[in-house]
Length: 121
Image 1 (cartoon, rainbow, N blue to C red):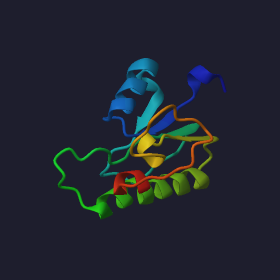
Image 2: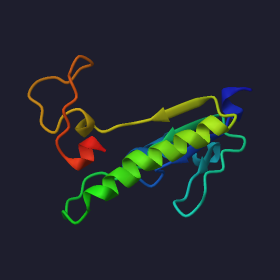
Image 3: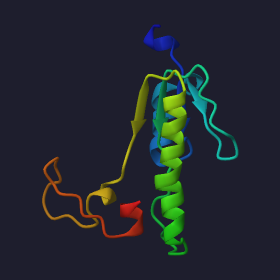
Image 4: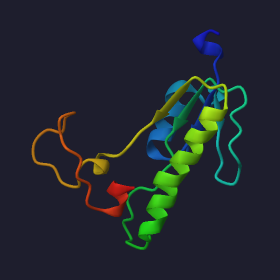
């Protein structure tokens, strides 16, 4: 199947990265997941999982919320991917998964040491 004919399943379309992906590639190529829906990966060539709970600038989120969204939701999406005919699974993780504070350059040799629930989730 030509790349231009492929359909992509996207979570997190309303977030910063999700909006950029849609603007760059065009919404017509995507099946966009709504939080109120079950995962329907029918006909999707790949899954791009960008949904997640990020910064809580008001400091009102419970630690459990981070794990439910960032860990458990990712497992659900990945399991739906495994049960589908999709070929590629892409997910992104914030820098907080490796370090909450950095001095110097972050690279592949850096040992992960998240401190916050956001980073650990």
